[in-house]
Length: 156
Image 1 (tube, one colour):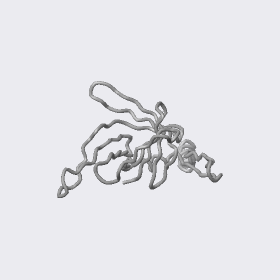
Image 2 (tube, one colour; image 1 turned 135 degrees about the vertical axis):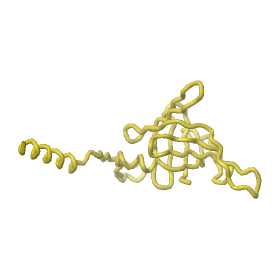
Image 3 (cartoon, rainbow, N blue to C red; image 1 turned 30 degrees about the horizontal axis):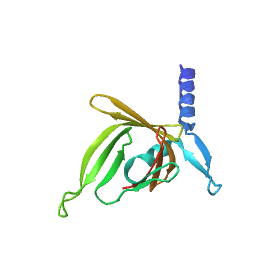
Image 4 (cartoon, rainbow, N blue to C red; image 1 turned 90 degrees about the vertical axis):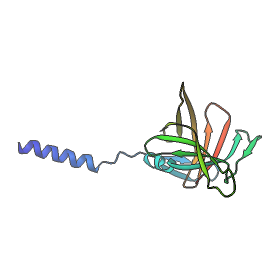
């Protein structure tokens, strides 16, 4: 009985001390610097509210700049894997900003750079896939995998 308890204790300690977090390295094409992306950290960096500030096509010939003021489009990523997209509006100068829900669903990150959004619609489901080009504390840049669109966000 003591041997079994000892083995279980050793296995438990071994499981507690091992680190399963993978760290991958990416090379920044502009400066040649190597940055580390922690797979568990990217989930926490993505969670929160992001305001859409710019939408361009891949070659940069067409661009739409969005305002950080109202009206604006806000995407809220929750830690539990759900997201909601809101329109932030203000009907007159004396009112506070109001957020009206546009759509919602679930999100997942694959391979540290692929963001998949599964929209929950009343009669069907829509799935969009994005490549995370840049993410830090203040900015997020997503490239749509199917369309030729790049969206730039700032943290709210």
